[in-house]
Amino acid sequence: MKFPIKKFISYYKPYLTLLIADFICALIAAGITLLLPLCIRYITKNILEDGMANALNEIYRVGLIMLVLVLVHTFCNLFLGYQGHVIGARMESAMRSELFEKYQKLTFRFYDEHKTGELMSRISNDLLSLTELYHHGPEDIIVYSVKFIGAFVVLIHINIKLTLIIFAFLPIVAIYILIQNKELKLAYRESKERIADINTQAEDSLAGIRVVKSFANESVEQKKFNIQNHRFLQSRKRVYKDETVLFDGAEAIIQLIHMAVVVLGGIFILKGSLDLADLLTFLLYINFFMEPIQKLVHITQQYQEGFASFHRFMEIIDLEPEIQEIPNAKQLTNVKGEITFEEVGFRYQDDYENILNQISFQAQPGEYLALVGSSGVGKTTLCSLIPRFYDIKEGRILIDGTDIREFSLKSLREHIGVVQQDVYLFAGTIFENISYGKPNATREEVIQAAKQANAHDFIMGFPQGYDTDIGQRGIKLSGGQKQRLSIARVFLKNPPILIFDEATSALDNESERAIQHSLEILSQNRTTLVIAHRLSTIRNAKRILVLTCDGISEQGTHEELLQQNGIYADLYQMQF
View 1 (cartoon, rainbow, N blue to C red):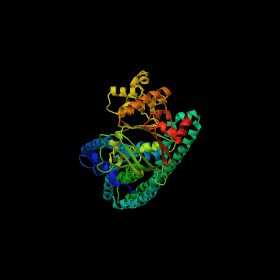
View 2 (cartoon, rainbow, N blue to C red):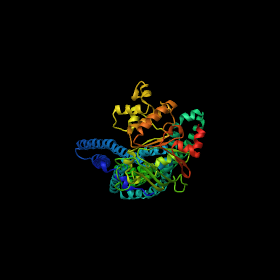
View 3 (tube, rainbow, N blue to C red):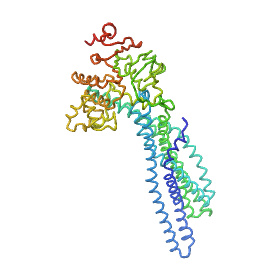
View 4 (tube, rainbow, N blue to C red):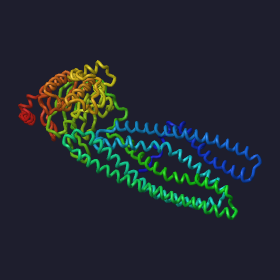
Protein backbone atom coordinates (compact mmCIF):
# COMPACT_ATOMS: atom_id res chain seq x y z
CA MET A 1 0.00 0.00 0.00
CA LYS A 2 1.46 3.34 -1.08
CA PHE A 3 1.78 5.81 1.78
CA PRO A 4 -0.89 8.55 1.41
CA ILE A 5 1.43 11.51 1.97
CA LYS A 6 -1.15 14.15 0.92
CA LYS A 7 -3.69 12.79 3.39
CA PHE A 8 -1.01 12.63 6.10
CA ILE A 9 -0.03 16.28 5.56
CA SER A 10 -3.65 17.46 5.37
CA TYR A 11 -4.06 17.05 9.13
CA TYR A 12 -1.60 19.94 9.69
CA LYS A 13 -3.86 22.41 7.87
CA PRO A 14 -5.93 23.65 10.88
CA TYR A 15 -2.74 24.34 12.84
CA LEU A 16 -0.56 26.06 10.22
CA THR A 17 0.06 29.22 12.30
CA LEU A 18 1.16 27.23 15.32
CA LEU A 19 3.17 24.91 13.10
CA ILE A 20 5.04 27.83 11.48
CA ALA A 21 5.85 29.21 14.94
CA ASP A 22 7.08 25.74 15.88
CA PHE A 23 9.32 25.64 12.79
CA ILE A 24 10.75 29.11 13.52
CA CYS A 25 11.61 28.07 17.07
CA ALA A 26 13.18 24.88 15.74
CA LEU A 27 15.34 26.86 13.30
CA ILE A 28 16.41 29.32 15.99
CA ALA A 29 17.23 26.53 18.46
CA ALA A 30 19.26 24.65 15.83
CA GLY A 31 21.09 27.83 14.80
CA ILE A 32 22.01 28.68 18.39
CA THR A 33 23.28 25.14 18.89
CA LEU A 34 25.68 25.72 16.00
CA LEU A 35 26.73 29.17 17.24
CA LEU A 36 27.70 28.21 20.79
CA PRO A 37 30.76 26.08 19.82
CA LEU A 38 31.94 28.95 17.59
CA CYS A 39 31.81 31.23 20.63
CA ILE A 40 33.92 28.70 22.55
CA ARG A 41 36.37 28.50 19.62
CA TYR A 42 36.57 32.29 19.52
CA ILE A 43 37.48 32.41 23.22
CA THR A 44 40.06 29.59 23.10
CA LYS A 45 41.65 30.44 19.73
CA ASN A 46 41.24 34.17 19.10
CA ILE A 47 41.27 35.52 22.66
CA LEU A 48 43.40 33.13 24.72
CA GLU A 49 45.73 31.53 22.16
CA ASP A 50 46.42 34.71 20.16
CA GLY A 51 46.68 36.87 23.29
CA MET A 52 44.05 39.47 22.35
CA ALA A 53 44.34 42.87 24.00
CA ASN A 54 41.67 43.58 26.61
CA ALA A 55 41.00 39.81 26.67
CA LEU A 56 39.04 39.85 29.95
CA ASN A 57 36.45 42.34 28.72
CA GLU A 58 36.15 40.40 25.46
CA ILE A 59 35.52 37.17 27.39
CA TYR A 60 32.81 38.95 29.40
CA ARG A 61 31.22 40.24 26.20
CA VAL A 62 31.23 36.82 24.52
CA GLY A 63 30.01 35.22 27.73
CA LEU A 64 27.06 37.63 27.84
CA ILE A 65 26.23 36.81 24.22
CA MET A 66 26.35 33.11 25.04
CA LEU A 67 24.06 33.68 28.04
CA VAL A 68 21.50 35.45 25.84
CA LEU A 69 21.78 32.68 23.26
CA VAL A 70 21.20 30.03 25.96
CA LEU A 71 18.12 31.87 27.26
CA VAL A 72 16.67 32.16 23.75
CA HIS A 73 17.55 28.51 23.11
CA THR A 74 15.79 27.50 26.33
CA PHE A 75 12.67 29.50 25.45
CA CYS A 76 12.53 27.93 21.98
CA ASN A 77 12.93 24.45 23.42
CA LEU A 78 10.16 25.13 25.96
CA PHE A 79 7.88 26.25 23.15
CA LEU A 80 8.77 23.18 21.09
CA GLY A 81 8.34 20.86 24.04
CA TYR A 82 4.85 22.14 24.94
CA GLN A 83 3.22 23.68 21.87
CA GLY A 84 4.77 21.12 19.55
CA HIS A 85 3.28 18.28 21.55
CA VAL A 86 -0.04 20.13 21.76
CA ILE A 87 -0.15 20.22 17.95
CA GLY A 88 0.37 16.46 17.85
CA ALA A 89 -2.25 15.86 20.55
CA ARG A 90 -4.82 18.05 18.77
CA MET A 91 -4.23 16.24 15.51
CA GLU A 92 -4.53 12.90 17.27
CA SER A 93 -7.79 14.05 18.84
CA ALA A 94 -9.15 15.18 15.46
CA MET A 95 -8.18 11.87 13.86
CA ARG A 96 -9.75 9.91 16.70
CA SER A 97 -13.00 11.84 16.18
CA GLU A 98 -12.81 11.20 12.45
CA LEU A 99 -12.24 7.50 13.00
CA PHE A 100 -15.11 7.25 15.49
CA GLU A 101 -17.36 9.12 13.04
CA LYS A 102 -16.36 6.58 10.39
CA TYR A 103 -17.23 3.74 12.76
CA GLN A 104 -20.70 5.27 13.14
CA LYS A 105 -21.21 5.29 9.36
CA LEU A 106 -20.12 1.72 8.67
CA THR A 107 -22.80 -0.89 8.22
CA PHE A 108 -23.85 -3.92 10.21
CA ARG A 109 -21.93 -6.15 7.80
CA PHE A 110 -18.67 -4.43 8.77
CA TYR A 111 -19.32 -5.15 12.44
CA ASP A 112 -20.32 -8.72 11.60
CA GLU A 113 -16.79 -9.22 10.27
CA HIS A 114 -14.66 -7.18 12.71
CA LYS A 115 -14.05 -7.68 16.40
CA THR A 116 -14.65 -4.89 18.89
CA GLY A 117 -11.24 -5.23 20.56
CA GLU A 118 -9.43 -4.87 17.23
CA LEU A 119 -11.42 -1.71 16.40
CA MET A 120 -10.68 -0.33 19.87
CA SER A 121 -6.96 -0.88 19.30
CA ARG A 122 -7.08 1.28 16.17
CA ILE A 123 -8.79 4.14 17.96
CA SER A 124 -6.57 4.04 21.04
CA ASN A 125 -3.12 2.41 20.76
CA ASP A 126 -2.53 3.17 17.08
CA LEU A 127 -3.38 6.86 17.29
CA LEU A 128 -1.16 7.37 20.33
CA SER A 129 1.83 6.56 18.13
CA LEU A 130 0.84 9.32 15.71
CA THR A 131 1.10 12.14 18.27
CA GLU A 132 4.89 11.87 18.46
CA LEU A 133 5.20 11.39 14.72
CA TYR A 134 3.15 14.46 13.88
CA HIS A 135 4.99 16.56 16.43
CA HIS A 136 8.58 15.44 15.91
CA GLY A 137 8.40 14.45 12.25
CA PRO A 138 8.73 17.80 10.43
CA GLU A 139 10.43 19.46 13.40
CA ASP A 140 13.24 16.90 13.46
CA ILE A 141 13.72 17.21 9.70
CA ILE A 142 14.25 20.97 10.07
CA VAL A 143 16.46 20.80 13.18
CA TYR A 144 18.73 18.04 12.00
CA SER A 145 18.96 19.37 8.45
CA VAL A 146 20.16 22.73 9.82
CA LYS A 147 22.62 21.03 12.18
CA PHE A 148 23.93 18.69 9.50
CA ILE A 149 24.43 21.38 6.83
CA GLY A 150 25.70 23.98 9.32
CA ALA A 151 28.16 21.56 10.91
CA PHE A 152 29.37 20.44 7.48
CA VAL A 153 30.09 24.06 6.45
CA VAL A 154 31.99 24.76 9.69
CA LEU A 155 33.96 21.49 9.46
CA ILE A 156 34.95 22.21 5.84
CA HIS A 157 36.14 25.63 6.99
CA ILE A 158 38.26 24.10 9.77
CA ASN A 159 39.86 21.27 7.77
CA ILE A 160 38.57 20.16 4.40
CA LYS A 161 40.63 16.94 4.21
CA LEU A 162 39.46 15.61 7.57
CA THR A 163 35.87 16.54 6.79
CA LEU A 164 35.85 14.71 3.45
CA ILE A 165 37.35 11.60 5.03
CA ILE A 166 34.61 11.60 7.65
CA PHE A 167 31.98 12.31 5.01
CA ALA A 168 33.02 9.12 3.19
CA PHE A 169 31.63 7.07 6.10
CA LEU A 170 28.08 8.39 5.61
CA PRO A 171 27.04 6.18 2.65
CA ILE A 172 27.93 3.14 4.75
CA VAL A 173 25.66 4.33 7.57
CA ALA A 174 22.84 5.24 5.16
CA ILE A 175 22.91 1.87 3.36
CA TYR A 176 22.95 0.02 6.67
CA ILE A 177 19.94 1.98 7.97
CA LEU A 178 17.93 1.48 4.78
CA ILE A 179 18.46 -2.29 4.86
CA GLN A 180 17.49 -2.60 8.52
CA ASN A 181 14.53 -0.24 8.13
CA LYS A 182 12.70 -2.69 5.92
CA GLU A 183 12.85 -5.43 8.54
CA LEU A 184 11.84 -3.05 11.32
CA LYS A 185 8.80 -1.84 9.38
CA LEU A 186 7.47 -5.40 9.07
CA ALA A 187 8.13 -6.03 12.74
CA TYR A 188 6.16 -2.94 13.81
CA ARG A 189 3.26 -3.90 11.57
CA GLU A 190 3.07 -7.37 13.10
CA SER A 191 3.30 -5.93 16.61
CA LYS A 192 0.31 -3.63 15.95
CA GLU A 193 -1.75 -6.60 14.80
CA ARG A 194 -0.80 -8.70 17.82
CA ILE A 195 -1.76 -6.02 20.37
CA ALA A 196 -5.10 -5.71 18.56
CA ASP A 197 -5.55 -9.48 19.05
CA ILE A 198 -4.85 -9.08 22.77
CA ASN A 199 -7.45 -6.32 23.05
CA THR A 200 -9.97 -8.47 21.21
CA GLN A 201 -9.41 -11.46 23.47
CA ALA A 202 -9.51 -9.37 26.66
CA GLU A 203 -12.69 -7.55 25.57
CA ASP A 204 -14.37 -10.83 24.68
CA SER A 205 -13.47 -12.53 27.96
CA LEU A 206 -14.31 -9.58 30.21
CA ALA A 207 -17.62 -8.85 28.45
CA GLY A 208 -18.63 -12.47 29.05
CA ILE A 209 -17.18 -12.76 32.56
CA ARG A 210 -20.48 -13.96 34.05
CA VAL A 211 -20.69 -16.79 31.54
CA VAL A 212 -17.03 -17.62 32.25
CA LYS A 213 -17.65 -17.87 35.97
CA SER A 214 -20.93 -19.76 35.60
CA PHE A 215 -19.06 -22.51 33.74
CA ALA A 216 -15.97 -22.21 36.01
CA ASN A 217 -13.90 -21.69 32.86
CA GLU A 218 -11.47 -19.08 34.17
CA SER A 219 -8.57 -21.37 33.27
CA VAL A 220 -9.89 -21.74 29.71
CA GLU A 221 -10.03 -17.96 29.26
CA GLN A 222 -6.59 -17.60 30.82
CA LYS A 223 -5.21 -20.13 28.36
CA LYS A 224 -6.78 -18.31 25.40
CA PHE A 225 -5.39 -15.00 26.65
CA ASN A 226 -1.95 -16.49 27.23
CA ILE A 227 -1.84 -17.69 23.61
CA GLN A 228 -2.46 -14.16 22.32
CA ASN A 229 -0.13 -12.70 24.93
CA HIS A 230 2.64 -15.06 23.83
CA ARG A 231 2.11 -14.13 20.17
CA PHE A 232 2.43 -10.47 21.12
CA LEU A 233 5.58 -11.25 23.11
CA GLN A 234 7.11 -12.95 20.07
CA SER A 235 6.28 -9.96 17.88
CA ARG A 236 7.85 -7.58 20.42
CA LYS A 237 10.94 -9.76 20.58
CA ARG A 238 11.26 -9.41 16.82
CA VAL A 239 10.87 -5.62 17.13
CA TYR A 240 13.53 -5.44 19.84
CA LYS A 241 15.89 -7.65 17.84
CA ASP A 242 15.55 -5.47 14.73
CA GLU A 243 15.84 -2.29 16.81
CA THR A 244 18.99 -3.59 18.51
CA VAL A 245 20.63 -4.58 15.22
CA LEU A 246 19.74 -1.19 13.74
CA PHE A 247 20.63 1.03 16.69
CA ASP A 248 23.76 -0.72 17.95
CA GLY A 249 25.11 -1.33 14.44
CA ALA A 250 24.75 2.33 13.53
CA GLU A 251 26.20 3.35 16.90
CA ALA A 252 29.27 1.20 16.26
CA ILE A 253 29.88 2.91 12.90
CA ILE A 254 29.50 6.34 14.53
CA GLN A 255 32.01 5.40 17.25
CA LEU A 256 34.46 4.41 14.52
CA ILE A 257 34.00 7.85 12.97
CA HIS A 258 34.82 9.54 16.29
CA MET A 259 37.94 7.37 16.61
CA ALA A 260 38.96 8.34 13.09
CA VAL A 261 38.59 12.05 13.93
CA VAL A 262 40.83 11.73 17.00
CA VAL A 263 43.51 9.64 15.24
CA LEU A 264 43.56 11.65 12.00
CA GLY A 265 43.27 14.93 13.90
CA GLY A 266 46.33 13.97 15.96
CA ILE A 267 48.26 13.19 12.78
CA PHE A 268 47.26 16.55 11.22
CA ILE A 269 48.38 18.40 14.41
CA LEU A 270 51.78 16.70 14.23
CA LYS A 271 52.09 17.70 10.59
CA GLY A 272 51.14 21.30 11.45
CA SER A 273 47.96 21.45 9.34
CA LEU A 274 45.63 21.59 12.36
CA ASP A 275 45.95 23.13 15.84
CA LEU A 276 44.54 21.84 19.12
CA ALA A 277 41.78 24.49 19.38
CA ASP A 278 40.53 23.56 15.91
CA LEU A 279 40.59 19.85 16.81
CA LEU A 280 38.49 20.53 19.94
CA THR A 281 36.06 22.57 17.82
CA PHE A 282 36.07 19.83 15.20
CA LEU A 283 35.16 17.26 17.87
CA LEU A 284 32.29 19.45 19.05
CA TYR A 285 30.95 19.90 15.55
CA ILE A 286 31.41 16.30 14.57
CA ASN A 287 28.79 15.55 17.21
CA PHE A 288 26.39 17.96 15.47
CA PHE A 289 27.37 16.44 12.15
CA MET A 290 26.71 12.89 13.36
CA GLU A 291 23.73 13.71 15.58
CA PRO A 292 21.27 13.64 12.64
CA ILE A 293 22.66 10.23 11.71
CA GLN A 294 22.31 9.01 15.28
CA LYS A 295 18.84 10.50 15.60
CA LEU A 296 17.88 9.08 12.23
CA VAL A 297 18.29 5.64 13.73
CA HIS A 298 16.03 6.49 16.67
CA ILE A 299 13.61 8.51 14.52
CA THR A 300 13.29 5.42 12.33
CA GLN A 301 11.55 3.67 15.20
CA GLN A 302 9.17 6.60 15.64
CA TYR A 303 8.49 6.92 11.91
CA GLN A 304 7.98 3.22 11.32
CA GLU A 305 5.64 2.83 14.27
CA GLY A 306 3.76 6.02 13.35
CA PHE A 307 3.47 5.11 9.66
CA ALA A 308 2.27 1.61 10.56
CA SER A 309 -0.41 3.22 12.74
CA PHE A 310 -1.36 5.66 9.98
CA HIS A 311 -1.73 2.82 7.49
CA ARG A 312 -4.11 1.03 9.88
CA PHE A 313 -5.99 4.31 10.42
CA MET A 314 -6.39 4.82 6.68
CA GLU A 315 -7.59 1.24 6.17
CA ILE A 316 -10.75 2.23 8.03
CA ILE A 317 -11.03 5.82 6.75
CA ASP A 318 -10.82 4.62 3.14
CA LEU A 319 -13.66 2.15 3.59
CA GLU A 320 -16.88 3.13 1.91
CA PRO A 321 -20.06 2.16 3.80
CA GLU A 322 -21.77 -0.65 1.94
CA ILE A 323 -25.13 1.08 2.28
CA GLN A 324 -25.04 4.41 0.44
CA GLU A 325 -27.59 7.13 -0.05
CA ILE A 326 -28.39 8.19 -3.58
CA PRO A 327 -27.50 11.81 -4.50
CA ASN A 328 -30.14 14.27 -3.29
CA ALA A 329 -31.96 11.57 -1.33
CA LYS A 330 -35.54 12.38 -0.31
CA GLN A 331 -36.59 13.14 3.24
CA LEU A 332 -39.20 10.72 4.53
CA THR A 333 -42.08 12.83 5.87
CA ASN A 334 -45.78 12.50 6.57
CA VAL A 335 -45.48 8.73 6.89
CA LYS A 336 -48.70 6.76 6.52
CA GLY A 337 -46.95 3.45 7.20
CA GLU A 338 -47.68 1.30 4.18
CA ILE A 339 -44.87 -1.26 3.81
CA THR A 340 -44.54 -3.31 0.64
CA PHE A 341 -42.14 -6.18 -0.09
CA GLU A 342 -41.86 -7.03 -3.80
CA GLU A 343 -40.04 -10.29 -4.61
CA VAL A 344 -37.36 -9.53 -2.02
CA GLY A 345 -34.28 -11.76 -1.86
CA PHE A 346 -31.36 -11.39 0.53
CA ARG A 347 -28.04 -13.08 1.36
CA TYR A 348 -25.28 -11.90 3.64
CA GLN A 349 -22.45 -12.57 1.17
CA ASP A 350 -22.50 -12.81 -2.62
CA ASP A 351 -21.20 -16.39 -2.50
CA TYR A 352 -23.76 -17.46 0.15
CA GLU A 353 -27.19 -18.90 -0.48
CA ASN A 354 -30.22 -16.64 -0.06
CA ILE A 355 -31.70 -16.44 3.43
CA LEU A 356 -34.85 -14.80 2.09
CA ASN A 357 -36.41 -15.82 -1.22
CA GLN A 358 -39.09 -13.98 -3.18
CA ILE A 359 -40.72 -12.37 -0.15
CA SER A 360 -43.81 -10.45 -1.18
CA PHE A 361 -46.43 -8.94 1.13
CA GLN A 362 -47.99 -5.62 1.99
CA ALA A 363 -48.63 -4.15 5.42
CA GLN A 364 -51.40 -1.57 5.36
CA PRO A 365 -51.07 1.70 7.30
CA GLY A 366 -51.79 1.01 10.95
CA GLU A 367 -51.83 -2.78 10.48
CA TYR A 368 -50.63 -5.04 13.28
CA LEU A 369 -48.64 -7.73 11.48
CA ALA A 370 -46.90 -10.72 13.08
CA LEU A 371 -44.06 -12.85 11.74
CA VAL A 372 -43.62 -16.42 12.97
CA GLY A 373 -41.52 -19.36 11.90
CA SER A 374 -38.82 -21.68 13.11
CA SER A 375 -35.41 -20.31 14.14
CA GLY A 376 -33.10 -19.39 11.30
CA VAL A 377 -35.68 -18.73 8.59
CA GLY A 378 -34.87 -15.00 8.51
CA LYS A 379 -37.56 -13.24 10.56
CA THR A 380 -35.13 -10.81 12.20
CA THR A 381 -33.23 -10.38 8.93
CA LEU A 382 -36.46 -9.48 7.12
CA CYS A 383 -37.22 -6.75 9.63
CA SER A 384 -33.62 -5.48 9.50
CA LEU A 385 -34.08 -4.75 5.81
CA ILE A 386 -36.81 -2.15 6.41
CA PRO A 387 -34.54 0.44 8.14
CA ARG A 388 -31.74 -0.62 5.72
CA PHE A 389 -29.46 -2.16 8.31
CA TYR A 390 -28.69 -4.41 5.34
CA ASP A 391 -29.52 -3.85 1.68
CA ILE A 392 -31.58 -6.32 -0.29
CA LYS A 393 -30.05 -8.23 -3.21
CA GLU A 394 -33.24 -8.67 -5.19
CA GLY A 395 -36.63 -6.98 -5.44
CA ARG A 396 -37.82 -3.80 -3.72
CA ILE A 397 -39.07 -2.59 -0.35
CA LEU A 398 -41.40 0.40 -0.41
CA ILE A 399 -42.81 2.72 2.22
CA ASP A 400 -45.92 4.57 1.12
CA GLY A 401 -45.21 3.50 -2.46
CA THR A 402 -41.60 4.79 -2.61
CA ASP A 403 -38.49 2.58 -2.66
CA ILE A 404 -36.73 2.98 0.68
CA ARG A 405 -33.41 3.42 -1.17
CA GLU A 406 -34.66 6.81 -2.35
CA PHE A 407 -34.85 8.15 1.22
CA SER A 408 -31.99 9.47 3.33
CA LEU A 409 -30.94 6.92 5.95
CA LYS A 410 -31.44 9.36 8.82
CA SER A 411 -35.01 10.28 7.89
CA LEU A 412 -35.86 6.63 7.19
CA ARG A 413 -34.60 5.39 10.54
CA GLU A 414 -36.11 8.30 12.46
CA HIS A 415 -39.56 7.00 11.50
CA ILE A 416 -38.92 3.39 12.52
CA GLY A 417 -38.80 2.18 16.09
CA VAL A 418 -36.99 -1.09 16.81
CA VAL A 419 -36.91 -3.14 20.00
CA GLN A 420 -34.34 -5.83 19.34
CA GLN A 421 -34.21 -9.28 20.86
CA ASP A 422 -30.75 -8.59 22.28
CA VAL A 423 -31.42 -5.60 24.53
CA TYR A 424 -28.57 -3.11 24.77
CA LEU A 425 -28.51 -0.43 27.44
CA PHE A 426 -25.75 2.14 27.77
CA ALA A 427 -23.73 2.83 30.90
CA GLY A 428 -25.46 5.69 32.72
CA THR A 429 -28.77 6.41 34.38
CA ILE A 430 -32.25 5.10 33.68
CA PHE A 431 -33.29 8.58 32.51
CA GLU A 432 -30.39 8.77 30.05
CA ASN A 433 -31.23 5.36 28.59
CA ILE A 434 -34.92 6.06 28.07
CA SER A 435 -34.27 9.56 26.70
CA TYR A 436 -31.98 8.00 24.09
CA GLY A 437 -35.17 7.54 22.10
CA LYS A 438 -35.64 11.33 22.06
CA PRO A 439 -32.53 13.18 23.29
CA ASN A 440 -34.36 16.48 23.90
CA ALA A 441 -37.24 14.87 25.82
CA THR A 442 -38.47 16.44 29.03
CA ARG A 443 -38.53 14.50 32.28
CA GLU A 444 -42.31 14.34 32.11
CA GLU A 445 -42.14 12.75 28.64
CA VAL A 446 -39.63 10.16 29.87
CA ILE A 447 -41.80 9.29 32.86
CA GLN A 448 -44.87 8.95 30.63
CA ALA A 449 -42.98 6.60 28.28
CA ALA A 450 -41.86 4.52 31.25
CA LYS A 451 -45.44 4.25 32.50
CA GLN A 452 -46.61 3.12 29.06
CA ALA A 453 -43.92 0.42 29.11
CA ASN A 454 -44.94 -0.70 32.62
CA ALA A 455 -41.51 0.37 33.93
CA HIS A 456 -42.36 3.34 36.17
CA ASP A 457 -43.15 1.32 39.28
CA PHE A 458 -39.92 -0.66 39.39
CA ILE A 459 -37.93 2.49 38.54
CA MET A 460 -39.40 4.34 41.50
CA GLY A 461 -38.47 1.36 43.66
CA PHE A 462 -34.83 2.40 43.37
CA PRO A 463 -33.60 4.97 45.93
CA GLN A 464 -32.53 7.35 43.15
CA GLY A 465 -35.43 6.61 40.82
CA TYR A 466 -34.80 7.76 37.25
CA ASP A 467 -31.30 8.91 38.23
CA THR A 468 -30.22 5.38 39.17
CA ASP A 469 -26.99 4.29 37.52
CA ILE A 470 -27.61 0.92 35.86
CA GLY A 471 -23.96 -0.06 35.25
CA GLN A 472 -22.29 -1.36 32.12
CA ARG A 473 -24.96 -2.74 29.76
CA GLY A 474 -27.55 -2.39 32.52
CA ILE A 475 -25.95 -5.10 34.63
CA LYS A 476 -27.75 -3.91 37.79
CA LEU A 477 -31.17 -4.66 36.26
CA SER A 478 -32.99 -7.90 35.67
CA GLY A 479 -33.66 -9.14 32.15
CA GLY A 480 -37.29 -8.06 32.30
CA GLN A 481 -36.39 -4.62 33.62
CA LYS A 482 -33.88 -4.08 30.84
CA GLN A 483 -36.45 -5.15 28.27
CA ARG A 484 -39.02 -2.71 29.62
CA LEU A 485 -36.53 0.19 29.48
CA SER A 486 -35.78 -0.62 25.86
CA ILE A 487 -39.52 -0.64 25.13
CA ALA A 488 -39.94 2.68 26.96
CA ARG A 489 -37.22 4.10 24.72
CA VAL A 490 -39.32 3.28 21.65
CA PHE A 491 -42.50 4.57 23.30
CA LEU A 492 -40.68 7.89 23.72
CA LYS A 493 -39.52 7.92 20.11
CA ASN A 494 -43.15 7.39 19.05
CA PRO A 495 -42.47 6.44 15.42
CA PRO A 496 -45.13 5.65 12.79
CA ILE A 497 -43.56 2.23 12.07
CA LEU A 498 -42.76 -0.21 14.87
CA ILE A 499 -40.68 -3.39 14.82
CA PHE A 500 -40.66 -5.64 17.86
CA ASP A 501 -38.22 -8.54 17.72
CA GLU A 502 -39.21 -10.81 20.59
CA ALA A 503 -39.88 -7.62 22.56
CA THR A 504 -41.58 -9.41 25.47
CA SER A 505 -39.35 -12.49 25.55
CA ALA A 506 -37.72 -11.65 28.90
CA LEU A 507 -40.89 -10.65 30.75
CA ASP A 508 -42.84 -12.61 33.30
CA ASN A 509 -46.46 -13.44 32.50
CA GLU A 510 -47.90 -10.52 34.47
CA SER A 511 -45.55 -7.98 32.91
CA GLU A 512 -46.05 -9.53 29.50
CA ARG A 513 -49.80 -8.98 29.70
CA ALA A 514 -49.30 -5.38 30.81
CA ILE A 515 -46.76 -4.70 28.05
CA GLN A 516 -48.95 -6.45 25.48
CA HIS A 517 -51.79 -4.12 26.39
CA SER A 518 -49.43 -1.12 26.09
CA LEU A 519 -48.15 -2.33 22.75
CA GLU A 520 -51.67 -2.62 21.43
CA ILE A 521 -52.37 0.96 22.50
CA LEU A 522 -49.09 2.18 20.98
CA SER A 523 -49.70 0.30 17.73
CA GLN A 524 -53.00 2.03 17.07
CA ASN A 525 -52.71 3.97 13.81
CA ARG A 526 -49.11 2.75 13.49
CA THR A 527 -47.81 -0.01 11.27
CA THR A 528 -46.43 -2.68 13.57
CA LEU A 529 -44.35 -5.75 12.76
CA VAL A 530 -43.95 -8.22 15.59
CA ILE A 531 -41.58 -11.19 15.57
CA ALA A 532 -42.64 -13.74 18.13
CA HIS A 533 -41.91 -17.30 19.16
CA ARG A 534 -44.45 -17.12 21.99
CA LEU A 535 -47.61 -17.31 19.93
CA SER A 536 -49.73 -16.17 22.86
CA THR A 537 -48.47 -12.62 22.28
CA ILE A 538 -49.77 -12.37 18.72
CA ARG A 539 -53.28 -13.87 18.88
CA ASN A 540 -54.78 -10.43 18.32
CA ALA A 541 -52.58 -9.64 15.30
CA LYS A 542 -54.62 -8.50 12.31
CA ARG A 543 -52.53 -10.79 10.14
CA ILE A 544 -49.88 -13.43 10.81
CA LEU A 545 -47.22 -14.34 8.24
CA VAL A 546 -45.62 -17.78 8.52
CA LEU A 547 -42.05 -17.59 7.19
CA THR A 548 -40.10 -20.63 5.95
CA CYS A 549 -36.88 -21.08 3.98
CA ASP A 550 -38.95 -20.96 0.79
CA GLY A 551 -40.67 -17.67 1.65
CA ILE A 552 -44.07 -16.86 3.13
CA SER A 553 -45.95 -20.15 3.28
CA GLU A 554 -49.08 -19.13 5.18
CA GLN A 555 -50.83 -15.95 6.20
CA GLY A 556 -54.05 -15.05 7.95
CA THR A 557 -55.48 -14.44 11.40
CA HIS A 558 -54.81 -16.74 14.34
CA GLU A 559 -58.10 -18.56 13.87
CA GLU A 560 -57.72 -18.85 10.10
CA LEU A 561 -54.24 -20.36 10.38
CA LEU A 562 -55.37 -22.88 12.98
CA GLN A 563 -58.15 -24.00 10.64
CA GLN A 564 -55.62 -24.50 7.83
CA ASN A 565 -53.93 -27.12 10.04
CA GLY A 566 -50.51 -26.30 8.55
CA ILE A 567 -47.18 -25.04 9.84
CA TYR A 568 -48.71 -22.46 12.19
CA ALA A 569 -51.05 -25.02 13.66
CA ASP A 570 -48.10 -27.35 14.30
CA LEU A 571 -46.18 -24.55 16.02
CA TYR A 572 -49.21 -23.72 18.13
CA GLN A 573 -49.76 -27.33 19.15
CA MET A 574 -46.12 -27.64 20.24
CA GLN A 575 -46.49 -24.61 22.54
CA PHE A 576 -49.95 -25.36 23.90
